[in-house]
Length: 272
Image (tube, rainbow, N blue to C red; front, top):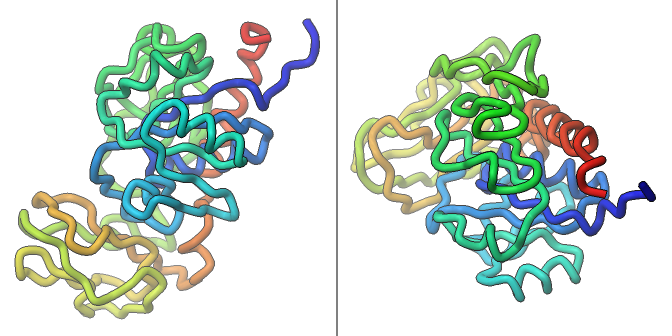
């Protein structure tokens, strides 16, 4: 087998939020240039500064110097690749998959359950987090839970079940996450990178205020005017107080991206 031209391998990613975008950044930097990402019509990313799905709203999104553009069909995707960009499209039913004939499919929706991905979707199918079983509905599963096994590539079996408890950052778990107190329209006069103190009002939903429980920096905030449901994650306070963390891929996303890269390289013999 001769050397593989990584730039010609087509990679489809379900999702365009923080985790999916971290994976895309890692793959792009490793030389994979034909990447397309499929999102819902109205993405609900909280860490918008590092989420390529923002291209759905704004036509273009840049994460750590890598640019993604909104596309609508195959020709748009090919044109984006020609310009050195990632392609993002609103395709909640993943209808473009068959037409693009991706060699690798990554389910990075982080839905905690399988929403319809099958092992027949591509020669290599990778599922991130709980909801998938390696060798059954996907070829490989990547562990997404913080801790000793974060980033482990699983060849048989599943990731750890969802605990419902956010990962520990700066000694805080549940307290650092902001959730909608009711269903309705999200509103905030704050922006990502703003400093807040415990007790400060960060945003409101349907007229009900949401206050920060800790001191820190707003690392993520859902888009202004978004219609949300009660309990939805709408914000993220980082107690470490480093503004640069707001616009860079997290250590967790970077680790998972490296694991996806590992899984692709390990399976490369079947793609040459």
